[in-house]
Image 1: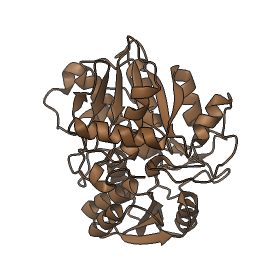
Image 2: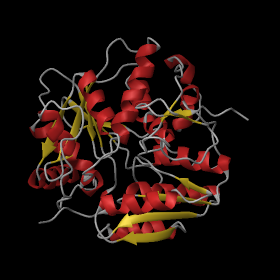
Image 3: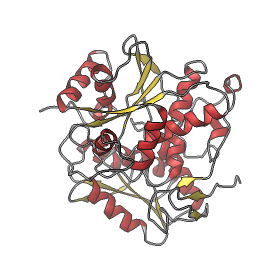
Length: 369
């Protein structure tokens, strides 16, 4: 059996053994990273491999698991002369979160905990529930009140137990973390567990392959907890260090104007959050995260890439969703935020960009007043 890499805290250097169920740094309670620096395979060697994210085996810290649903390898289609979209809502559970959830379920299946718990505003919870069902692992998902009924229905359909927490997304996270400290619990956290990031990074590995061994000038990414952006930064680093790309794309992060703590910190030139704003209503519920635990890492990744932060209004989100629908793409309201920014706020003169369409419109319906 392949040995698992250890985890470590990037703040104080504390190391956590690979087989431990500890979900955070035991010293500072912060998120953990993976002691893992793989070398990607060259483009020509990928031909004939499985048509899933597991084709990038050299870059993944786990072997192909029994619980795979064939996730990954989503298509790229043009939206305009400069901008293309990667259709990550065409995943088994209809969101990009499958990329990381399969990694968490595979890891949990290997560690054999008594139970698995997760917390989510919807998509990560549905993904973890689905892959735990596939792996025959008991699963409980904590969600905030007001979560989309369709997402709740999907979580329950996969057999997971639902814990609906009064209050906002932060209250839900606190409740899940308290439960995560109990013995025998595997916390399938898409925020704290670094295996999730090593799943989301395959988004960029796929782009690199589909674009013939190159990447666009700009990667536009929605940011709440930052799991897709940090995964993208990991993949860019891997490809660049291996000499498979000669330049790094700029990472442009998008938040809803209603809940934009990272964008506020960016505009102030800060290295960390300035304050924790209340969670205001927004159509982009999936990125309405007032206190992302990996804030410093997210801000640093955007800054080092030469990118920037952008915010979009509720009207811009609504119009972007209808515009995509008019092009045949029915995407949930959170998933259209990047297209809203690419249309109206990100300067793309003589540059190419790719936006992720992260979740299916059936999960939330149309954004309405």
